[in-house]
Length: 251
Image (cartoon, rainbow, N blue to C red; front, side, top):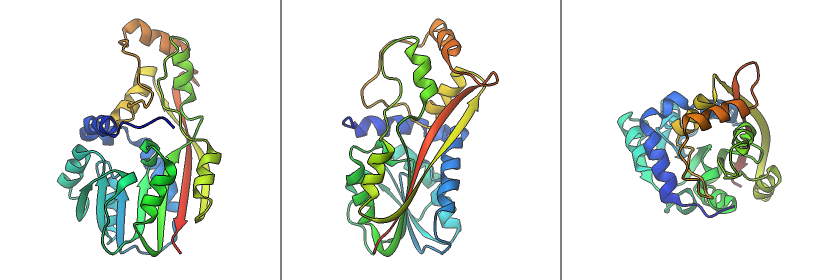
């Protein structure tokens, strides 16, 4: 995986904090699926790692958990704090979480670890936060996600316009030495046009490219080219995501 500029990632998500909820359909679908994979029990202490604006910090707090909300972006944490989403807020990198007292019965991380430099380091860091018997529940995207976006841009230039996500095998290897179960599901979101599809990515802050991006402006003409090249279905522009869901139990 390419080296990740964490400051640039934090800045991209910070710019999206105020309007994140308008574009978070994938995050909600992903979280709903992850919830179905959890054991049916109460979790006294929850770490929401990559909390964003705090939607699921609030979910767990409303369930009666004591919640620590962690994010790389200070702007996201400010938004979560304004919504009183958690009991504690911590700005930190998932790959380098400072020691936290007592441990957590649940470490929850929904669509965050794909922004890490090394999946094994990220999972080890999250696993260390668990109390004995605790559960680490996470989702991330796999290789092959966003094929429509990539296909449309290939008609215009040879620059990368979406990050390359880890292969399913790489992810399964990363969780293989833990006691775990994992699933892969596919979710397709439909948009009325190419601009709406790309705005959905910008709206959740998922615009930072690890490889760097072209400096060319998206003109009206280029947007029309994208619209024509987008593999439409029923007159709509889809975005397809392959979602890896992992649940790890600490012995």
